[in-house]
Amino acid sequence: MLQGQARIVVLAGAGLSAASGVPTFRDAQTGHWATFRPEDLATSEAFMRDPQMVWRWYLSRRETIGQVSPNAGHDALTRWQRERDVTIITQNVDGLQQRAGGTVTEFHGNLFVDLCFEEHRVLSATEQHPGEPPRCVHCDAYVRPGVVWFGENIPTHAMREAEHAVDHCDIFVSVGTSSLVYPAAGFAEAALRRGARFIEINPEETPLSSLADHRLAEPAQIALPALVDALLSR
Ligand code: BV8
Image 1 (cartoon, rainbow, N blue to C red):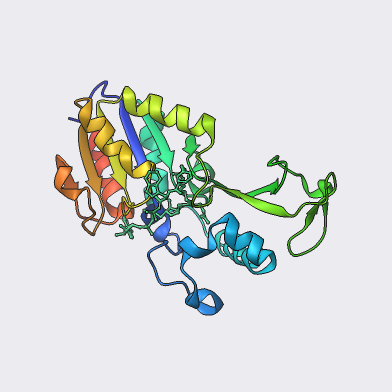
Image 2: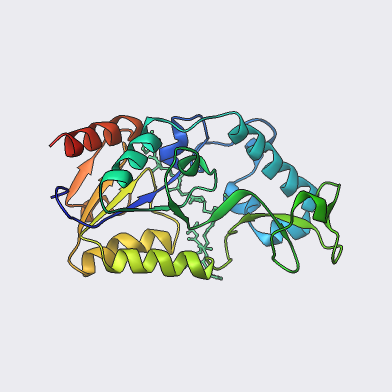
């Protein structure tokens, strides 16, 4: 099915970065953050209510991710993308697939980008007054992370890229996602409606598992290298 000229879309979730040591959203938060649910912190309401606390949460995640490396799952996706028609849509904000050399559509933004909270434009370090959070030198609003918060729309360019890829794919592969967060979780069904095949790679079941043509109930760092080796060796 995956051989030849098949047009493949891969939707990646936090499970792909788990082997690198990045806690998934479903993992209990550790340490100081253990008392919070990510869905409650990753919102503009939480940021407006307590900018310092939310900013510190993002700083701690930047620090964690700054110390980890892409894993064999990321490397396999990059290898696959170099040899075949593979589009990678990532829900992850950790930048690890790019560090592994892949080209991705960042559907939920990027943790390491700083935005002006009011103007919603990217700010370089020199455009910020230091602080927790820093402030925009142009309008004095708080600086926020360049991620898509719950309740916020997906960036237009990312949505357009993703929808186009899903509309034209032969096979839709979801890897390491709980398939709970929309609109990303809606892509598998959109692909199926168009007659594409659906492969799910996840050690756990998800609400979409019953729709999959094939399920690889394996961790991504094991399943992806094995799958890509098998495909590229023929
Ligand atoms: C929006 C950035 C329009 C922030 C994130 C229906 C339609 C539209 C919207 C909604 C809807 N229903 C509800 C909504 C609202 C909401 C939503 O989906 N809520 C959920 C909780 C029900 N969606 C939104 O708000 C989206 N915006 O729709 O705009 C709109 C506008 C106004 C009002 C309404 C709608 C925006 C969603 C983006 C949120 N931002 N991230 C940040 O990072 O701080 S999403 C965030 O959670 C992550 O980025 C990630 O994408 C997601 C968690 O999902 P996963 O990646 O799947 O990770 P998870 O931990 O859940 O699961 C890990 C999986 O890996 C598990 O299954 C596990 O078994 C597996 N695993 C573990 N280890 C491995 C593994 N798999 C393989 N290998 C391993 N080794």
